[in-house]
Amino acid sequence: MYGTTWCPDCRRAQRVLDQVGRPYTYVNIESDEQAAAYVMQVNRGHQSVPTIVFPDGSILVEPSNMELQAKLIG
View: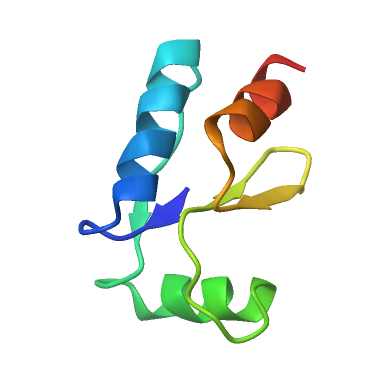
């Protein structure tokens, strides 16, 4: 999961991931230039966060709780 420390949607997504019990790695794009570049690449030049990359290669950007839960639970 790519995010920033000031992003409320990032904290919300982290809560959903924690509630569902899914492990994840948090990458702060403010302190990682390569991560920021990747987020911009997959979001057409925007630093949209949270950008969540799943093991199957799919990506959700700024998902709602329902969207994220549906992806996690299947």
